[in-house]
Every structure is written in C-alpha cells, then in structure tokens.
Length: 247
Image 1 (cartoon, one colour):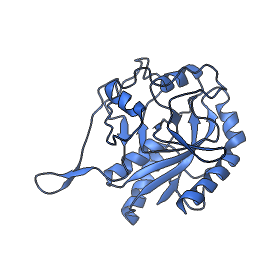
Image 2: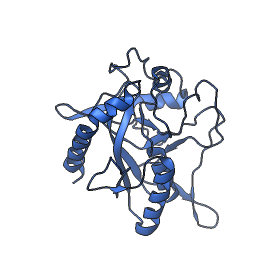
Image 3: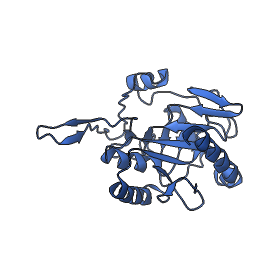
C-alpha cells in the first residue's frame, strides 16, 4: 500500500493520510485496521540538512523524532525516539504464544541504535559503536551540497538514490543552518514531517514499511521559498521514479 501526506502533496497511486505525525498516525491506523496491507510505502518530499542534493531520491526504513535543541541539552524525551522497520517484521513469541515486538528505550538525551541488517554501510557500523559522534560533515554553506558519507547508486543520469538514510520527523521545519549542522554531524540527513509516525504505526501492526523521498530544499532560511519553487518538479520526478521501479 502506497500512502502520502496529501493536500498539496498527492499522487494518484497513493492514499493521503494527513500532514504531520498526529494526523498521519490516526489515518494510517484506520487504513491498517480496514485493509491489513502486506506492506506500507510512504512517498513524499524532504528537506536536506546539507548532504543530499535537490531532487535526490532516497529510500529509507529508519526515522527519528527529534526537535531542535535536543543536541544542545535543552530538551530531553522519555520516548524511544528511534525506529527502524526492516523489510520483514521482527517479532517473536512470548510464553503464551502471542507475538511481541522487540522494544528498545532511549535514555533521556541519547538515541539508541540497533542495526539489524549487517549489510548496511560502514556508516551504520560506526553508529553502533559511537552513535551521534561526529558522523557526517559540517555544513560549510547553506546552498552547497557536501561530499558526505552516503551509499548511493545511479539508476540513470541525474537520478541518484541513496540507502540507508536516517529521516527526522518533527512538527516544525528547520530553517536554521546551525541546527541543520547538528543533525548532519550526528548522522541524520533529511527531515519529513510524517515518516516517524508511519514507521511507528507499521511496527505496531507488524507490517514491513519504508519511505521513498525526494529532496525539495535545504534546511536554511530559504527552505519554504525553495520548497514552493521545487515542489511540482520534485513530485514529477518522484512519480516517474515510482512508476519505473515499482509498477
């Protein structure tokens, strides 16, 4: 089942679930209860913290839920703010024979990493050893695309797809370059408002899930202006990519 945020970001092959984590979680839960999909693929746009370029296409199974200020120690959270949903659901049986999830809990002002796929890139191995310790590169310019750690393959000329990329979800759009630097230096490349909620719902129903994103803007003072300017073209590129590789 393909889903999208909806409103100005609709695709004729995807069901809208709402903008932001709350609306997306409510509607996707309804869809899962009504249709019991075999898998969920969320499609949408994303903002880049600096490494990923405009119109890059990214596939991911991993999301975090972080607000600006987290890395400065100005906020903390008791929730598990990291989720990864693999291609196949990871569940086990308890003593009664019922299925249960493998759960992890984040410690106050840190993120817990559990890489379940050893074939991930060297970057993921580094995260296991020292999560959020200097991964990525500093953002030298709000308009530059940096030579960052990435796993990418070229489908065709000018079409770049990277795996595995961590997506941050928040109710707010980042427009501060210093904040973008913090995400980037901690191994987080993109932001999208719904993806964390999508993975949380999928995980609760033991449904494999992933997201396919296209970058519309950098997370700087021009974020909204660039999003508006690039949005229509980005949707066309993403639509073509989905139809080519998932038809």
